[in-house]
Length: 82
Image (cartoon, rainbow, N blue to C red; front, side, top):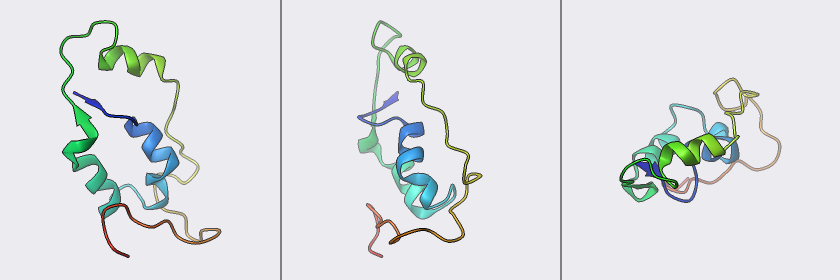
């Protein structure tokens, strides 16, 4: 099984880190079945191959938690009304 459109690392670096690792927003994204697809075998386009090609790494600048004071407006949730 693999992520559709955006890998977990890319989601975290783009958006998730601003909410925090245990936030309802990040958990909702991880639990949303629309973000996944079944991938059969390892073939040339399988999840393992795509993962090896993706050179993204988790951004640890925030230490895995939301920043104490953000610059600009807070991001709006894709899953909840804030």
